[in-house]
Every structure is written in structure tokens, then in C-alpha cells.
Image (cartoon, rainbow, N blue to C red):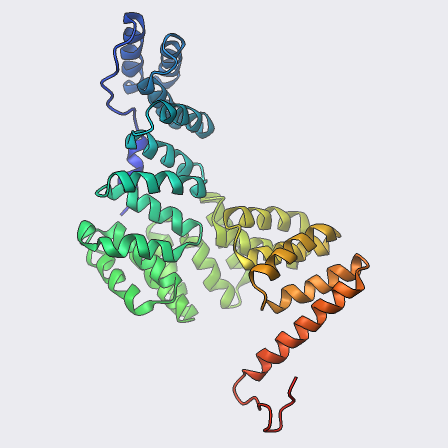
Length: 381
């Protein structure tokens, strides 16, 4: 089951526009451009669409088809520019807006695809492909709760669609809901053995910290489909937990060969490169991880650590101050912030952060099993 293959096929060719009648010359050029486009002469089609637009700059069908031609060449920035112009001409067109979202999605900018896809599904509540792509974008940006909120109420619309079950099951497993996730795993397995089914089983094992079980399932997944998104990344996580860092690094690199914007692979590679003092490499991976998921606390904290390690203390402070604002109980961030303030010769700020870290540490220790509370031999802070 190719992941979202049906939805992404929308990018394969120009939409079937009737075409508003403009000057006869423009109409002839437009029909010629479609012929070239359908015949696979993409460069010729692009030239013809541009000629149409020179005569009729606000012709939405030519703008949209020109965007589709650029997609065929992998020139997503040019495609996005044309789709955006087409939207300005025809803001009510869900077809153009969906193609714009797909161009963002295919160019690894899911955060920009999301608002466009939300508008599509608001206008067309039965647009199944748009729901699936939106769910995929939510997954890529770490918004698992949004996936569940989007897809779970639409079970009747999708029935036993394996792509629907895969996306919803993935989100539930990310949220450690193995019991509910298992129902969707069963749907995927019901469609026959597939890489997606083994991937979901591997995720379930990871959630239970059964790393050997996860390794076995994920090995099967990557053998069945070596290009399945996230499979190598999750396989690398299982290998890392089993004490096989070299094999894990190979898996993460393989994931990045397939998808340079995989969050987990970038995060882990950044952490591993930093650990062996390959700091320039670490910066590339961690900066990319932070771009993909700017709200992720682990990615932000690792990047702040790297900034401290490389002497970019002012930048580290900016990151760490934002972290403790968003997550005031994150002990390590307060410790690092105290270190950064010391380096900047801000002793009062450093002392404040140390005291916060000590208080949070004491509170965490008091919650540990067997800890003694005040009045029973413990020390009241």
C-alpha cells in the first residue's frame, strides 16, 4: 500500500480546466500548452503557458497548469509561486488550493501545507485525500492529537481504508495508546501483509519498550518496502536502545537519504554527532530538527547545548529562556541557563537558575518510590 499514493497522484498532470475565453491567440496557445503537457514535453508546455500569461496575466487555468508543469520538473518554489497567483485570481478553487498544499507537502514544508489543507476540508467535507494528506502533515510536525481529532470522527467516511487506519494508528501509538492503536493495526494487517502493518507493529513494541520485538518487526518493514517513510528512523531507534549505535546510525542515514526532513533521524544524528565532537555536523542536523518541529523541547534543548559547547552563549540563552518559559519544570534547561549566565557574567541570574534547578530536583526526588515526606524523616524544603 503506497503511502498516500492516490492523493499524491493529483500532481501528475494539469487539472481539467474548461478555460475562460480570452483573446483567440491566447486560447490557441493554451490548448497547445495542454497538448505539450499531456505529451510529456514539459519545457515546451511551460513556454506556451508563459506565452498565454503574457497575453492574459490573470488567467487562472494557465497559472495553475504552469504550477503543475513546474511540479513535474521538481521545481516546487516556482510551482508554489504560480499556484499562489492562481489562488489570488480564484480564491474559492479547492482544486488549486489542494495542489498548492501538495506542492508544499512534496517540498517538505508540511507546516505551510496545513493551513491550505484545512481550508480544503472546510470547503469539501468529503475530500478524503485532503484529510489523509493533512493527517500526514500533522504527523510530520508532531501534532498527533490533531491527527486523532481529524480522523477519528470520520470513521464512517473511510471505512476500512488501510491508509486511514495506518495514519490514525500511527498517531495513537505515538500517544502511547496501544489498546486503541491495536484496532487500526488489525485493519492494516487485514489488508494482507505489508510494510505498513509491520511498521505499526514495530511502533507498538517501541511504545512498550520491547526493543527486540520492535527490531524484528521493523526489519521486516524495511525489507518489504525500503522506501517506506519513517521505517528506517524507527528501526534506528530500536537499534540504539539495544546498544547497536553503528547500525542505528546507518539506519538514520538511510532515512535521511529518503527524506532529509525526517525529524527523528535528524534529532538522533545531531545528538550522536555531538557526542563524538563532530560539532559542525551536529549543528546541521539539530538546526534542521528545530526547523521541522520548532516547538519540540528535546530538539531545542540539544541545540542550546550545542550553542554552549561552541561558544555561542548569547544564542544559547535566547533558546533556553524560551524553553523555561514554555516548560518551567525542565531541570536541565535551568542548569544550562545557569551555566550560560555565568559565562555572560550575570551572577544573580545564574544563582536564581541554580536555586530553581535545586528545588525542582528535590521535588522530583521526593516523588520517587520510597521517598520520605516531611514529618517522616524527610527534609522539608
